[in-house]
Length: 103
Length: 232
Image (cartoon, rainbow over all chains, first blue to last red):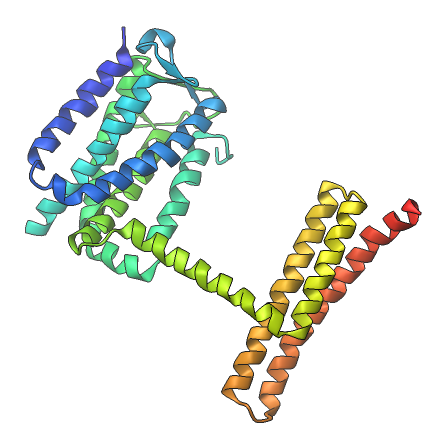
């Protein structure tokens, strides 16, 4: 069973979709911020993840992932964790920024 | 626990240097402090959320940590302290950058490109500084000696450690010579007349170059002389 995908879907994709709806009009105003966040995640973040995996910090159970691997890392990591996880952080920060300013 | 190849080690290695880059700059610091409420709240929300969901993923085996690479200490008997620190630092780093970048973007600027342009401008100025080398007698002598030493190093097949020492010493002597030239030029510009204090400043800078050159000469003789004797 692809536990990792399910986890990402429930805890990252669903709140991510809600945040995207909340911010649908504003997101376009922050396109450069979003772009640079993804650039950092897919460069430094990837290096961090890859090093952690190579030095045996954590490992993935092949029975709990889809089964597509990229140099020892499951594809969920690239599509789910980096893409959705980063969006979750961006979304929460921007929503709070919007609310805090109105206080 | 704080070794490089541990969970906390990696978290600190990848989060603290960029955090310093963001928070140490006075220009950025003012903006970040102004938005500190947003940053603190985002960090808190994300850390709590991450600390609540991470144990679920671990419980169902989405990934597992290697024994000895993490503390194994659980907070409230629920979440590993390593995970909490990861979420705390990652959230703090990202929310700081997002807030900063959002402020710049609102002004119609790109914070990252702004920094890259500033850095390139500094490099351009530094490269222009090389133009002073042909203007100074001592600088040209140091360059000529450096080329001689480098050619000797190639012919005498220095070991990697010897190469390392030679390159450091060449760099040190030339860098100090250039700083000395800059101080001399500035001093002459500020006070073209003979002044005891200015003379002392110029002599001190020149003494610094002399010390570095003397040390380089001693090390150079130690490395090259024995090799040359052995060669012949």
